[in-house]
Amino acid sequence: MRLLAYLQSLAWCIFLVHGNVEKTIFLAPEAIQIYQQHPNLEDLKLEVLSSSNPTLRRQLSAAFPKPASPKGIAAWFLLDKLTQHQRYEVRICWAATQPTSFTLTTYLLQEVFDTPELITSLADYSDSRQTILAPDQSPDYHRVDSNPESLLLLQVFAAADYFTTNKTLMQDVPPVNVEIILDPFLLNVLPRSLLPTGIYLIVLAVFAWHLSEYIWQGLSQISRTSQKQYAPLDGSEAGQRSKKVN
Image (cartoon, rainbow, N blue to C red; front, side, top):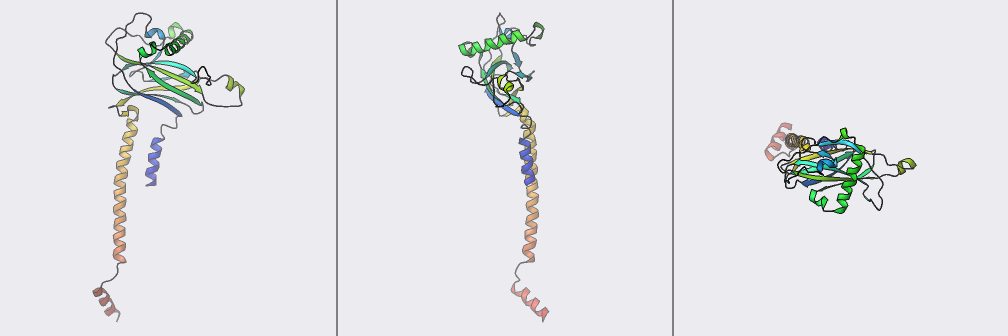
């Protein structure tokens, strides 16, 4: 039984060996119509997460918390072509060798446009993307006027979370290698990526149930045999044995 408990613990540790994980869970909003008159979403040069492109691997800039930016440096992403009212999870994974504190928040488009702090942060990040990317390096994202779609904006803050005597690392925080994953829920209950692990745990539980039943039957058989062997003799059996001895 200890072996089974060990295997169950090992199953939950599968995701821990890769490093640290931070996530946010949300429901996809109502679909809205997005028009292509400039400026538009494409002009923001944001990287896109969608059902056809659920994973992004890149480097995120980080900084130590300051009064003006207590959560670190912000990055923005577009969560596109969502299924309205479906539950989703966005995870960000990074190596434990790069101690960083991440904060993930999703926003409706209108919420960002109506909040000066958010629209300023989005504009600043978009400007930084425009200067870094060459024209031929723009994200492969081209929207055409079509049916309404469900989408959100994702804001990711990265704050350095370490202390070292290395002055260079304290002054210049290196970029953090991350993997950002958009994971839809099955029936709004279980993330799709956990389905194999869920099946494994169910199979393990069924196996443990049958094994425990087999062990219990074996122990019961041993117990009954022991009781018969050491049971006290009744009067007739004791008399017969005494006659044989005499």
